[in-house]
Length: 352
Image (cartoon, rainbow, N blue to C red; front, side):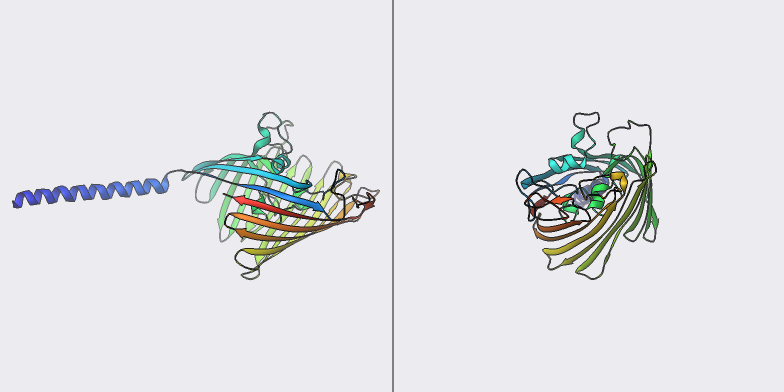
């Protein structure tokens, strides 16, 4: 009997050890196995002018997105990602008016190029170095294409005039002590499907503790950009963006600065103001977005007040915006030229 009991105990102990080892290996495999995920957003909005027509003569600020009258569609954004221990990919697809505006230079070749917002693979060469190859959204600027990642629903002139996306190879470096750096070689700005010119753009970024200094040179145009922000208290955040662009061949330029004070009223509601001053040189000529004088120079002051209410995964954003140009860049309700435009909108964004 004792021998049988010892034998049974030995079998039980062996089975227990094998089970523990199997569970341990399985847990390790689950931790290191690549993870596939699908995420994205869906958004829609209503927009109306206060001081300008809302019929077939309707106008909008000369910035990107949120510029359609009445009840309007934003976009459906679907992001498929496969994240491994060292390598992975992102396929970011967009459908709808906002997506069309975001990838305005496509399709250049593919009949489906107008739905590709980002499409890249990456390799974490080490803990401190990551290489990204393909089409990725720009590293310049405070605002981005995704409406869920911006506090204001409408976008700034700085964002609208700057690059949206790049295709190429970039290397990100973690330098330690809150320092980071990035260098990139890319196709000319916003030519995302292939390179039709034989020219190449170069980019660089230096970051420290959430503050970033960005550089881009593309086809004779040079841009320097500062993007950052500070938590002034638990409830109060101040975002900052400033940029200057100049083109060598024709002397055109733009310069702008924007402040983004945001205050958390509660866990589910915040208020934010974007105050932006933006001016262009003669490169943009008689740009309808802000108007220009006889020398081709124009400027605009834009103030945007936005509320952000969160209900689960849904964000509701009421917004009022005032654009005031140095020239008569807009029209009033009588269709007479005027230097200002007041408008309102209400947006709904669902993130998944």
